[in-house]
Length: 331
Length: 129
Image 1 (cartoon, each protein chain N blue to C red):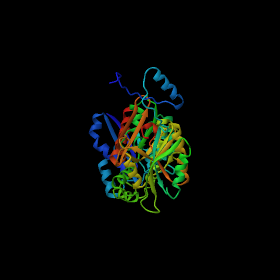
Image 2: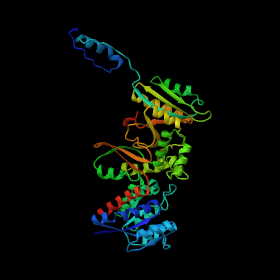
Image 3: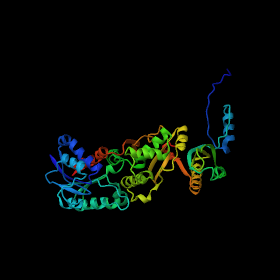
Image 4: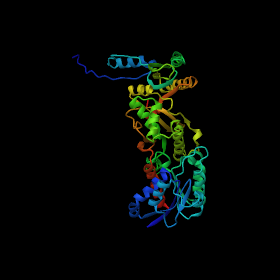
């Protein structure tokens, strides 16, 4: 049995999803010969540390009842630097201004000789090359499948399954909130403002939706794709991003009459663009609701398109768990 | 009935070599039944959103039509409420793909200056146009 000790830094929806997934998959993991032991969990109010392995059920219960997992005052950086373990799961919220606290957490992890698995887009959209080099310099794994497309395994597909192919271009719909809003506007002929309100009530859009509807979230994801797949050194400011706030129900109706749908499409190739686009109704990118989709054009395999749930606690945890297992099997 | 088998073959050919082709075909006993001219062979659809009418719609279309190599060949306009943004669906044809890209560049420039949102098809090489 291979034991891998893990810390979960950030215990919001994603961090809790990771804990639930590890609990749910305990038997499956044992059959695979892997024992994942969570030795530290931290949130904004404090942390719990147990080098023998935290009882995840009671940690989740405590978080639900008290709003925090805290049993002590050790910070995230204290756990990363001072508690012996193998993998840091960095799941703090995305900060697009300076990437913190995720950036410092990840750099500290590499410095302490720990692999990093993350769902946090901010540090990767701003400092991808720096983080990749820090991992490589220390001979460590840096896995970030959960940063783009939620459960949709874009990086695994490109780097593992499509190894040997040259990727010519990638197009995708990488923001479920925008996709939901555009789908509902088209279906119900409702104005943007009303559908946004509906999405907020359903918890699909944030109270301040700027990050999603202005295309910033999509731009961050596109930058991570550009850097990871095309070896670029781009930051999210390099993306030409246009959001969906000006789109009218009439425009969607005109598109519909001519057999198109309008989608917020990310395009990575010679240029990095996020913009509303006309997509033929039968095109593989024409997915509805909150779904995400990525279409990858390669020289050998041609075009490969995958779609799936782009957000959600367990869906994102699926990508994180997959990255953890990759490291467990390859280190 | 005339002792010949009717076969329809279509040639796409530039105008300057058309007569030579007809001559050669007829010399070899092939009857040319029809010759047609199709000038604008490349096409793209776009949607514009904003104050399309009040920002001189005629001028927007003229900027494409006056190129000589591209034309706005179809347009549908929806303007539900005065003072609010209108939406228009435009079809632009051009003599070739290169010229179509130039026409789109012009439209992007015009849209930017008139504060109109332009929604283009997904990349031309992905079957979107």
